[in-house]
Amino acid sequence: MRNNLIASMAIFLASSTVAFADASDNVVKIGILNDQSGVYANFGGKYSFEAAKMAVEDFGGKVLDVPVDVVTADHQNKPDVASNIARQWYDTEQIDSIMELTTSSVALAVQAISKEKKKIDIVTGAATTELTGAQCSPYGFHWAYDTYSLAVGTGGALVKEGGDSWYFLTADYAFGYSLEENTGNFVKENGGTVVGAVRHPLATTDYSSFLLQAQSSGAKVIGLANAGLDTANAIKQAAEFGIVAGDQRLAALLFTLAEVNGLGLEAAQGLTLTEGFYWNRTPETAEFGKRFFDRTGAMPNMVHAGTYSAVTQYLKAIEKAGTDEAEAVAKALHEMPVNDIFAENGKVGANGRMIHDMYLMEVKKPGESDIAWDYYKVLATIPGDQAFIDPSKSGCELVAQ
Image: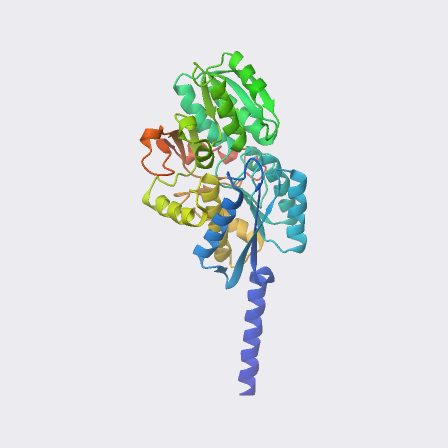
C-alpha cells in the first residue's frame, strides 16, 4: 500500500508540474490596450474591452483548467505611453498577450516590444500594413482590417463609378500615410490620378483650411485618410463648405458603425465605406449584436467584433497547443481556420495577416432604416484573397519569397 501511495503522489506531482508549466502563473492574462479617452474612444475603447470579456465568458472563463483574466489601459494614442504600459504588463504583471492596439504608431511600437519579449500581440484596431509587412513579427497578428483592404473596397468602388481623380486629407501619422499610399496606388493602377494631398494633426478640430485646399483641387473625390472623430468632424465641416452638395464626393476610407451612429444618418447618408463586420448581415451576427448591445448600449463595429474573434481564437490556440507558451500558440494560430461571428473560413498567412472577407457598404438614407442601428446596405462582398495583400508580396521576412 505504501508503494501505491508513493506512486500516486508521484503521478499527482508530475501532473501538477505539467499543468503549471502549460499555463504560466496558473492564469492566462490578456491586456486590451487602446484609446479610451480620445478620438478613437468609440471606434474601440471600452467597447473592445467588453468584447474581449464576452469572448472569455463565452469560452467558459477558463483554458487548460486555469482562469482567463482580461485587463485594460488607455494608451492616449501615444506610442511612448503604450510602450511603458506594455513593458510593465509583460515584466511585472505577467500579461501573456496584448490586443486591440488602436493607432498604427502605437501598434508598431507595442509589436516591436512583444517581439523582443516573445509575447503574442493581436492587432484589431490599427490599420497599417507595416504590421504584416516590413515590421512583421513571428508573434504578431493583424486581425480585423488594414489599409490595403480599405483601399480595395472603398477606393475600388469609387474609381469604377467614375471617381478617377483624388485629393487626400490625411492624418499626419503612420496610419494616415499608409491609407493614403495604398488607396492612391489602387486609384492609379485602375487608371485614375492623385492630384494632391494635405496632412492634418491627429484630433484636429478645425478642418477649414484643409477642406478649402481639397475643394480648390478640383478632384472628383476627396479621400479622408483618417478615422474616428477626425473623419466625423471633417464630414460635418465639408457639408458647411458645400462640398457634399457640389460635384465632389467624400470617401470615408476608415469609417465604422460607431462613427456613423455618432454622425447620424442625415449627415452620413450615401457614404461609401468598407468594414469587416456588420451586425445585421446574418442571423448569427444579429444575435451577437443583440447580446453586445444588451451589455454596452451600442452595436459592435468591426474592431469590437474583431477583438471578440481575436480573443476567442487565441484561447482556442492555447487549447490546441496545450500551453500558453508563445512559440506554440503562434504555431497554432497559423494552422487553425477562423470560423466565428466575425470571419467565415478565415486563415492566417505566414506574415500574421488574418485573411477574411470584407464588405463594401453604403450608408442608408434616414427613410431606409427601419430599426435602430440598421445603417448599412451591403453592396458587395470582397473575398479575402482580393481584400488583403498576398503574404508572399507583403515584404515580410518571415514569408518565403
